[in-house]
Length: 265
Length: 265
Picture (cartoon, each protein chain N blue to C red):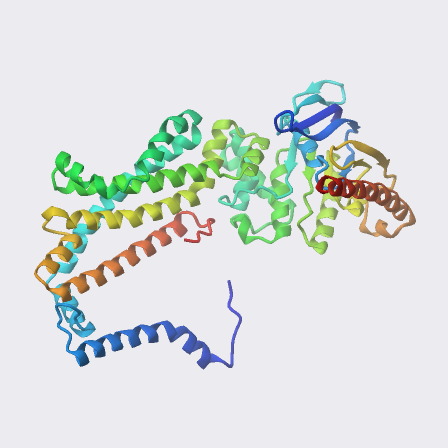
């Protein structure tokens, strides 16, 4: 899409583009002033400048990247398990009426259950090691992936299937050459939902019951317990940036793998 | 290839709430001629063409396709469809869309690419082989759909309001293309439309259908000389045919509107 050329009002459009950043800086400045002028204790609300100092220190001593890396590996593990299982089950349900009839009641019953309530049970079965964190996040992410895949396959434009039939595609060819590719955008949006809950569940699992001595969830809980509020804020900022990076990378991957799908997430 | 439809009935829905789309339609579509099927929207003209193409099952009646020796051939084996909304595969490039039918038949990649390239060139899209449908204009997409159908080399071409969504100028060009294709290949063409001038310009006969339930109201022979040209639109003969068809269609549209008003009150 080409933007129309604007010649005169460059200064106005620059202001327009810069406005969100100006507002961010203004909020940070107001925060800094609020803390300094009122002498608020850093335990309750540290100033942005001191959060930034902690953030730099944590980056330099490697603790931030170490914990982020560990969390990232767990997220990746949970996400891959959930994606593979979710897509397989969703495709199976979409392609076979019988499979849909058998599996659907299970999904209907288990999907609304808050997966976080499975944590005590999983800790009993699996302990508090890596497998527990991957299983809890994978179980949570499985549902949106499976449901989106199933829905995507069911909602494939029947016109495309008819056209393929008219052009001589057998029913097997219609499934492989039309139904699967046509549902890829829907499957991708399921993977986006799945990634979102995987991040949440891994960090939550890391926070619970001293189950861990690494990861961003651990860093948050530990810093909170020793009242290092600056570290808590620094960890939150790192997590927010990290989440945005993952989502962004996923979108780029979508565009690379399915350039025809004008995905609007 | 001659298409014979006898007492064709198509009813949708469960009894007693069935909606009659086609009511005992009988007609012999002559071989190697262009038959335009004209009628108010909802008259079942698309349904009839899809039944003839072997895409939709039907409720009652006979549909037969016979070659010049009178031998009956299975529905769908001799025809190919050009759809109103084109039904191009958005994930496939132009060349892969056009080659779809050959691919389903098991043709080797080299062979199908050669034939598809030649077909793409013949519809004037050389250089666009690697584009995807969404990167093309409406008229270009229309040509891809036409190429995808023509490559099947079927003696019957079924066209369901193929030019309805095009702008007036593009439509004229596409009509001229179709006239050329007909003159070259002498296929049996069924062309569904709701535009009277298009039906006269393209057709050897115009099958005028009634509003729902669809019946054949009248069949009008068009004896304009071939090859047809856009200039014929301004001849007195064209004008006479136009008036006659317009009269028939107006009657039907008014009747349909009256019935809708009665049903609403």
